Length: 260
Image (cartoon, rainbow, N blue to C red; front, side):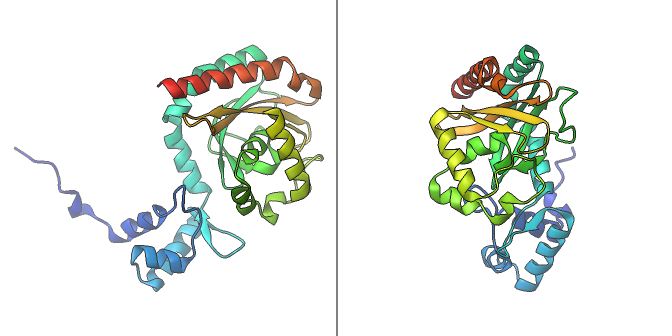
């Protein structure tokens, strides 16, 4: 009888070290210096430098303005593939489809990753201007309704840590928030009202409204939004029936998360 193969026979040390480096990043550790990586893993500094450089070159790590590195888009994309099978995405599928059918508009589910929103689910209306956004995409949180909603619920010190000058990079829509002070004023209003709206901040012709999906601890675990074309929908539409349906959908997903 043939036994199971011994995995250690096929061990690739260089690959294992690269994965060891990536595994350092979690909810508590969001960015590290190469020297920190070497110290935490026990990998010699020259080797750690080469591993970081390789992962950075391949898009699995990206360098921040302060010289530290953080998980790059490639890691987020891999993570989003896993998230498609996660409890949150699975439990959200039917409520999101019902919302998309009821409104005839694009519906999204996203989470906050540093100062960006990672899209976990997307049901797109064909006439929406952001055709290049898909599951696994990340967008600046400061210019999106989901992002602003989730930023609004961060503790002040965590919000301050996540926001940098790069969070307000040019190239967004005509109504994009210009700086930290303007954003903080918006976030205060969002906390008060319980929902967030963006009106052509991310891109010309795009509007959206978002509400939170609450986790078992009562804190926002994700955000869900409805995105519309500004050519078809006046801003007032986002504060009426669409918002009511969106809130009902978020409440449905919240209940499913708490009772699974």
